[in-house]
Length: 276
Image (cartoon, rainbow, N blue to C red; front, side, top):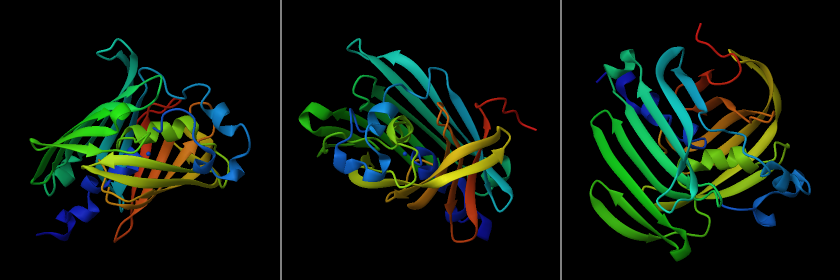
C-alpha cells in the first residue's frame, strides 16, 4: 500500500474540521458554560440574531502538504418540520479530489434538522463513504424524554442523552450563534455521535487578521478539542478562524496530522469569493 493511501493523511479524516469544527445547546447557556472573560451580556447579544441565513453555501478546498485532497461544502436552508414548526436544515458534504480518490475515495454526506426556536437538533442522518468503509447513521432526538433513537447500519438503540445535546453538525452553527469572539471566552458542548455522548470544549485563543480569496478580515482564532472522529478528521485539536463581523463565517480550519497539517480554506460563499 502506498503511504499516500493511509487514511490518516486523507480527507476522510477532515471530519471534525467542519463539524465543529464540524462545532447547539438550545436556549441561553448557563453561566458555568461561558468563562468570565466573555463579559456580561455577551451571550444575549450573540444570540439576538442568526449570523447565517437561508441559502448560505460555504465551499472549502481541503489541502495537505500542498496537495488538493478534497472539497467540502456546508449549506443552510429554512424549512418546516412535521409539526409545522420552523426549522433549519443543515447539510454537509466532503468528497475527495480525483487524485486522492484513486487511493482512498471519500464521499461523506450529512443532514441535520434543527428546531429554530430551541436550536436543538431533531433528526440527523449521515452516510459515511471512506475507502472500503461504509456506514449509515440515523438519529432521532427526543429531548423532552432525554432519549435518542440511534440507528447505525440497521441496528437500533434507545440511548440516554443529557439536556441540550447537539449532533455532529449542529454544533458548528451553535458556536457561530453564541460564542463571544473575545479572547478567553469558552464553551462546553455535549455532542452525540456514533451512539456516544462526548464533551467538546471550545475556546477563543485570540484575534488575528487573515487573508484569502475572500479578502483581508479580522478573525477570532478558536481552538476546538474534538474527542471523537467527526464527519469530515480524526479526534484532536482543530483551529478555526471565524470572521468577527455579523456573518461570523469560518474562513479557515486547520488540524495537525502525523506529517504536516490538513487545511480547509473557504473558496466560495463569502463576499466576492471566486475560484482563481
